[in-house]
Amino acid sequence: MQFTKSIDAFKRAQESIPGGVNSPVRAFKSVHLNPVFIKKAKGTVITDIDGNQYIDFLASWGPLIFGHAHEAILAAINEAAQKGTSYGAPTDYETLMAELIVKMVPSIEKVRMVNSGTEATMSAVRLARGYTKRDGLVKFAGNYHGHGDSFLIHAGSGAITLGLPDSPGVTIGTAHDTFIAEYNNLDSVRSLFWEKGNEIAAIIVEPVAGNMGVVAPTKEFLQGLRDITKEFGALLIFDEVITGFRLAKGGAQEYFGVIPDLTTLGKIIGGGLPVGAYGGRKDIMDMLAPIGPVYQAGTLSGNPLAMAAGIAMLTLINETPDFYSELERKAAKLESGLRDNLAKTGVKGVINRVGSMMTLFFTNEKQVTSLDEAMKSDAGKYANYFKMTLESGIYIAPSQFESLFVSYAHTDKDIDTIIEANLKALIQLK
Image (cartoon, rainbow, N blue to C red):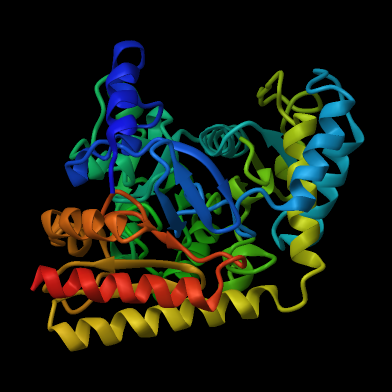
């Protein structure tokens, strides 16, 4: 493959955009390549500006669960756009979206729309602090909840991809109010609550970690968090920006049967457009302005284009009877193929999968259940693997510490193609 135009585009971008990208992991820095600039996409195929085509298993980092440029979603966006792109005033779209979310997500009785996952998590934490009248926040090392100050302490996603677990600009006061626990380790959570329980407003957690690579919760972990927060009068916040509507209609909380107090959403509810939301029990949500004292606002929140796209996306999910069973079948087929390839080649690795989310860790460890175990992965080997799969026409995350996403649009032929590309790459990595 030739990448001449992408290389030139990246050079040009660096002149006017910090690092040449508007989100750090797009820079391909950890895989030692120039980023590929995309021109267009349809279904499961994306095309770069050099004309190279790839089967996409990144899906814009998760939201495109029906593939790119789905006709029903495009039609909804176009219809909304013809009436105007933004009003800064209420629309029926917002109510329809809220009603769908309330109907589908077990914990949500009321929901507030925002413009990004980061905005949703920041707002949910502020609301939890206002509701409990406490300042402390428990988060987990390796979990990523966006780039709010409270979350950039032992964060996942691009922070660990680029080797930047903490960020300058985060104040000492903010760091003082953020307490770090270990994912899948209830003892680390209990010890924080025994010491500081009367100071802690909430626990925020990715119910399935997706930003240190995919790491599933143990059976006891999520329920343990629910029990501890109830005991100490704190709130439990599930960050379902990735898992919401991907694992089940009701997200990870339905999938695992553990109901949080607040839930943050994003990705899929925008149908490919920027959006976020947070919701929960009525008594908590009614603390928000204009009826309560906790202030949060956004001029473009509930933007009609994003709402129309999201309504179309959620409607497609509800009207597709085999949606989650097909996602599971396709993802299981891919997992099985990758496991067979590891066995055939003798390359050391761990495959973690929850539903249609999956990560292949290049590691000598027998399991990956925590950030410490994830960080023992061979990022250099992954960089070589990424390059080889890209040249084979497969597009995955340019980081060892992210997820692969299977969509409803992927065909069995697509799955076979990535399994073949994986085997070819593993043979070369031996």
